[in-house]
Image (cartoon, rainbow, N blue to C red; front, side):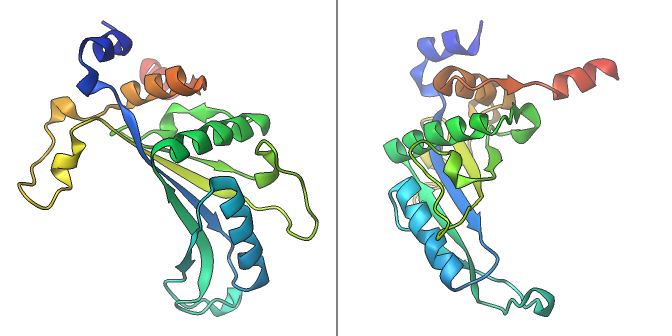
Length: 189
């Protein structure tokens, strides 16, 4: 039985997007960080928060607690819309999503080198070009049990998401082809 049939039979097993975290690692504060915040707000529709340096690095001119990056967490419809656009930009760059980008619990990450690859974005020499990291967390209905304050419990292994299930969900939902390399390595060994 395929995962699609299993999800039809029991809707509580169908994966969903919990959150999408978009990270701009600008590397410096000031004007470039402010322009990056405008770009990020335009792409995501949310105001980003500034991430701060954890330690001082004089060779890069970075001091501890100096804002050097931006981050946005998207949930619900905004997360799905952003992810559709992000996959379009990712494929426009000629890149592929590989199965080793997925962890054992179905979460995955990928990077986009230039924000101008997003639909509707044009190059502006005053702003420049920004790259970003996109981290996607997938879950099943019922995962609130492990995060709630009262009567917290563990999620049993049979209800956790697997790498294969997450790959099939992404391929079916977003129409993205995931290249499978891990299976080929196991077969050759």
